[in-house]
Image (cartoon, rainbow, N blue to C red):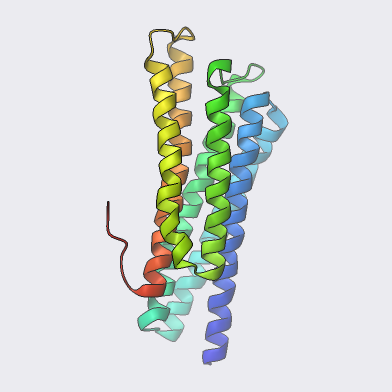
Length: 216
């Protein structure tokens, strides 16, 4: 019975890993659609969010059923409880990519991002991809060292977010209120993507060590 239990735990972890790959790909594709006004790619990301949502629902049901059947204690219980929180964070990361893609669709055939902010959005996507890649490693290997690193990695995203807001508030801004609102929301989507990744990493740290990462 314990072998079966741990096989199911491993399958749950593999599903989390799959979700992390899907949300990273979704944000990358959504950014490409945003910067190139690619309506077909935007629609693909929007449709794919339903898949991520369904994976989360299935994963949560499997996790709850496993808890009910096995009544785990100690580290196994921490693992399963953390899984529920982590799947919710991953689902939200997918939603954020979905929002980016919807912005691309809403402004089609125009590009939603003015040229003055293109570099910042590109850098935000690159930072999000790096965070997503490290997060996958953290989930796959329960790597607490890399889990702790993600908070610092997210500082780069926060700095980019501040740069974006500074441009929007500058006296040189000439693209109107509508575009400013779009860019404010887009900046928030990328910034929150990083925050959810940090939350997941902290959950992995808790699963392995039984200790919460102290808030800075």
